Image (cartoon, rainbow, N blue to C red; front, side):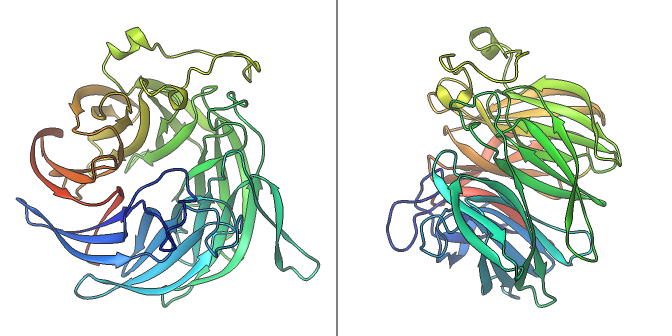
Length: 413
């Protein structure tokens, strides 16, 4: 098995990292797993800071560079990079582009393979970029207070990134509008399912649902679906067979299950906890009825208190039987919660895995549902666990890797 691992790192200029988190990763690592040991084979050095997320289409790999100044110009936007996967699994750089927004966090591909969709997170509280079209339909950079957006790019047959086709910007704020990362709109993840596009907006407590015109590449916003107030939706995954969405929140350790309709509306089915029950005796989940916090209200979200758990990543087994969630906890240790999927719309907690680090930034379930790979950003290691009846058992290996952030298994096409 071959695995690609992105890492959080400083730019090669050695200037201060311009993303939201710091690390000393070098780019994208190619690893080999033989069922017993994990080996580092190659390193593809990124020329522009952090690789926060990677995606793949056949023999092409796309990396998201979560920065505010991809070109070196402060506030010019983050970046995306394209690579060709060689026969020996090394990566050959093809081209790159600014993401037309600050700190891109996620990249996906349209169903027809003609477009790349990028979620630009924004930079919380700094003056950053804002792109508008002039009379000549050229995209012009302006300065503004933050912004969050979805950018649509052409994808050429040779895997290279083409021109920007559309750019949809999002405004607003969430409950913790005076802090906690909700002072502005912040898109965190974007995925495609059929002819619908879903995006988690942690800044506004919304899940945006859009439709892409596959002929023109233009976006249409269908619905702004409100989630639990103040909870900040971060990542999500789909059930492999049903129209079900599992949404992970970042401000409070919880996830929600939604059924989605073809018009983009979401129907809330269940909200579940992502930590052991005794955690909530000390930190009960809040229930807000007002839309925003008072100016002097105490911020109780996870971002404001290192003792609280902050969910990070979510994955589902390929057979649709198990769901997995990672939790960061900077004053303690990170965890992985395993759930049994009773049916597509209901889940039951099975086990909690305590990790050897505080910050499980990303993890992966192998396509054969036999192994779990967990990247611990604070420890510079990847831990490997055997899955027994869906539950991670004792650790069977670990490998030192600088600042691992995301995983992608190589599958032959």
